Image (cartoon, rainbow, N blue to C red; front, side):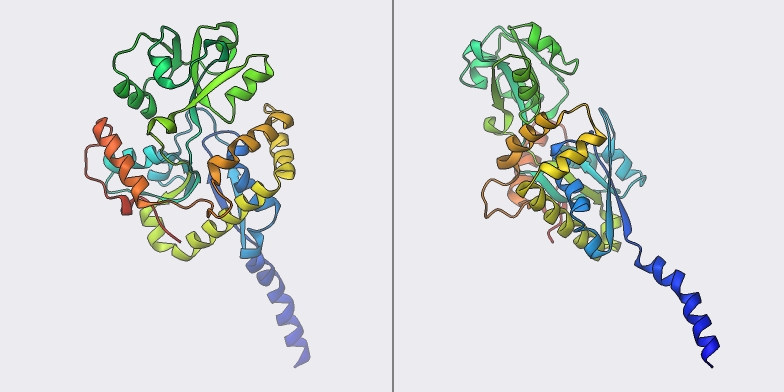
Length: 313
């Protein structure tokens, strides 16, 4: 009797080990490993994912990575998108809706950067001037600002990426993220004035973790775990960015460690406005306001419901 029992135990060992293996959660990023994704990497480094039987695997993206399309086409289950992308996608693909689970940035980091010596006090001053503004005119916030400031002397130019043109032209303003381009410009010896688009009344959530609605309906408990781990990862990262920044620097040496630390510091209040704020939470009011704005700009046509755009766990 003893020998079969021992044999059975030996046969069970591989299956037990397999059962204990964490489930991989692939998260498609829309850019390279940088502080804007710090919490997703921190969740893995601090092993808060492992404690719940999961293994976070953020997958680097790049310029133009079509994360929302990859979601809709069921190529991936988790992706980083913007709130506008969710609404535009749900307007165009009503049979394959996308749902937001977690919003990293409460204050959108997109901004217009100008040279400090221009002494602009606001974006209203910028649009009343004759500077050249380098940006992607198709961006939703660009359309919002053109609608808000229709009479302008500004000359518009296509955005070519980076800050090279800005550094070499004191009459140039450009698009960017307050957590990135101003740091690079200052490093290049150029003092800047930065104007957040959110201060103009356009403040969509961004760096949003999203899934498909049909996936969510079948995986409620897993989604709940993923949100919990994501929140813990971001809390861990905000408390101590050093180890995660060092790790991301290995994956993306293009952003040096000093700049990464400065970027992480610059984004703190954009992610957690107060110590009491629950990182990642969203509100129906914010979603409804964005729906109205996108409809007013004719970027969406249907009467989307705010409550259908995000999940609460």
